[in-house]
Amino acid sequence: MKTRIILCGACGKMGGNVLSLLAEDNEAVAVCGVDLYPKEIGVPVYKRFADIKEEADVIVDFSSAENLAERLEYAKTHKLGIVLASTGFTSDDLALIDEYAKSVAIFKTANLSLGVNLMEALIKTAASVLSDNFDVEIIERHHNLKKDAPSGTALMLADAVNAAFEEKKNIVNGREGIVGARTKNEIGMHAVRGGTIVGEHEVMFAGEDEIITISHSARSKRAFAVGAIRAAKFLKGKAAGRYEMKDLLAEENK
Image (tube, rainbow, N blue to C red; front, side, top):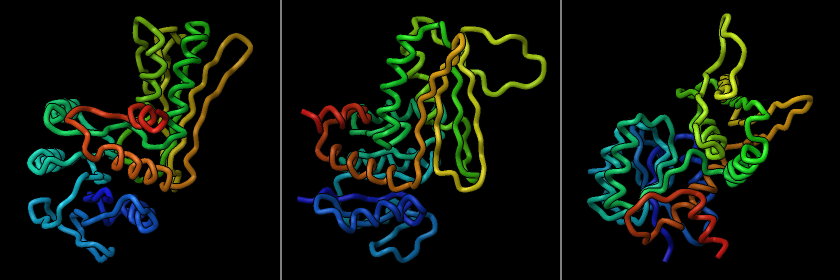
């Protein structure tokens, strides 16, 4: 039986990418959508989760961090898994996600791209090998409509660097004025916003007389839609708990 998906943020750009891919998918289908601004997209669209009539297996959420509790409560009440594909969550939001994960299967990752998750693994290795001999700077670039900075993916990559160190390095967001010489216990973080850049992330390891750069560039939003659908299929029938891309990849590569 196909994985039945409720698509939150259905009428946005990411919703359109997911629906386009699902139209040719033999294993998953969108049964309805939820969006504050409903329009005709080929499936029923509701303004509120409370109005949904269709049965489903998983919620795929490409909306925003707002009204998170409504989505999590609906998932809990109807025993659905939920893929949280948005970013910009506050510390209170993250605490709420952890609380609901006790009774809901929740898939959350800062980036649904396979390439970015491979990049994360490479960065962990590089940071471990290069250690404090190399300074680390992260540059992320996104379109001019993105609201949060730094991006969730950039923060995920900073965590990957810090995984190599017993004492975590501090994130320094940009630099201005006379800030003094760079210290070894920092990760420089720089956010660029402009035009229609989908998403670019670069981690630079700068050492004595040499620089190593690991980067990823998303050329369209379809890469994230592909990952969201894979996550939905993976999450169907899963027990309550927190899941991420490494769990999906481990299961796919058994």
